[in-house]
Image (cartoon, rainbow, N blue to C red):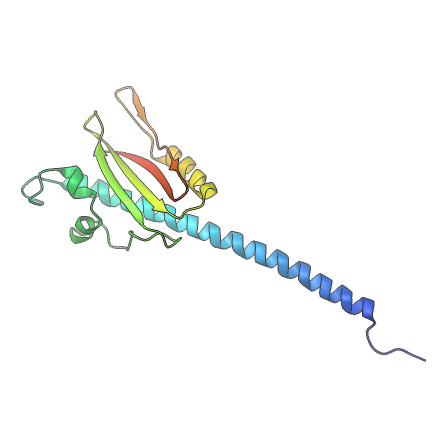
Length: 165
């Protein structure tokens, strides 16, 4: 008598193989999503830093604004948008947390520190962003090296990007 159907072992093998493929695909998809979010956050940081750089270079007390402090004016998302330096929504990061922005002038008046704090970013992503910040946004001026440092606590990833005026 010929058996024309699938046996129990064959069906279990197909189910097990399908489960392994589904697990692998899910893990891959998860990694892709995290990488996309990290790339998007880095692009936000670069966009914000470029906007601050434009703001700093064109700031003229009394002409640009009634604020006499360049750092106060250039660290406001709304001022950067109003002046046309920032055209994208940069206050919310890809992890649905808020972004913070700080701008300060270093002791050498030509070096500007742009501080970006992003809520809800996983620590391993924060570490990767820190390495990128150190590679790209490190400035040496008059013998002093300014480099990005990440401060990570349970809720915020913060990194410093240094630019010259």
